[in-house]
Image (cartoon, rainbow, N blue to C red; front, side, top):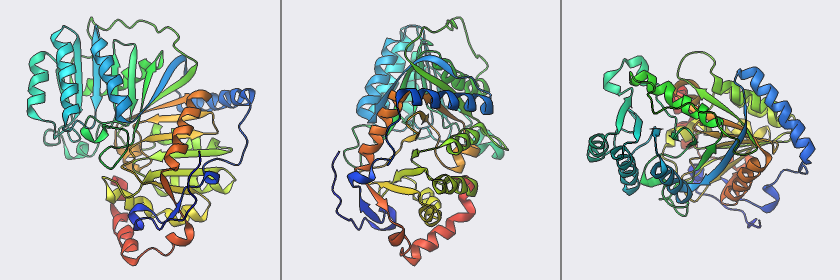
Length: 422
């Protein structure tokens, strides 16, 4: 991949102060590991993740990474149309647009055909869904439930949202990742109207973990957890991926999602790459990122640039840029459109993909689901996507970031008191 190395001024603090990505910047200086080395490294990481999280990893999974709406939505809609017994779907965002209607019609059609269709919508994130779509689905037999509608729950629970995205078809196919049901995700990230995101299609035993994430939140909102349409049949091997499904739950104290990210960063040897829509971690994880880079690991963070739907969250993360850059962390900002992916790859061996952002809201307040995947070929595909995204990004330079404007510095400071909610 060849890209220009001409320096850019960027678009100010919002869009990044840095240079265009150069081909020399896109890869780690270390040589790719041999297959035997990757296998040994995978076995080591597997035991570490299982031991520290207490969640067994399953073998025999087939995973397919889907890039942007042009790939994601057709695959999900085809799967819904293929359903013969059950469709279980949960989403944080269900907004407007023709794609929202496509999903409503697909779910309604399956329900009318006798398939059990359950839809769980977050009471805050999906609040702008059109009333006629709700009517269409409910009249067709879709069992629709809301997760913690703000006016119906205690103030303590209102801040804890269901941010998980999951679709499970006939207990055999599942999808999860970052995409919401709205026109913003349509297309192929060609311009600001088409967001950049990644979703994953899963077959094999890991489907059960994603189904359990749905069941956990459904149980809070609906008295019927399962029925005779649920067969609980075992899965046939569908591929070579070893997968751990980690569920983050809103609550108090240290959460599994924090442990997952901590174990991953502390295990890094050569390279860790993070792509996140919202980067606003606490001081602990900033320290951990700095320590990771300081011991010689190439640490890369890719996040939105001039196109972000949450400028406040972007400011909360920018408060930490100087320290990260001083410790050698590479920070990139994606230029064409809103970057909405949540991906981490480690040493060409492990990938994390799902709904979790690298911010305090995902780690402390929201219901999340993440896949930890040991499969070198799957990781290589995500790394190739990451390289492509870097070619469309600007890199932050310490020398230029240190000269950012006084108003920018003031905004960063003003955001600090509310950082724990972002």
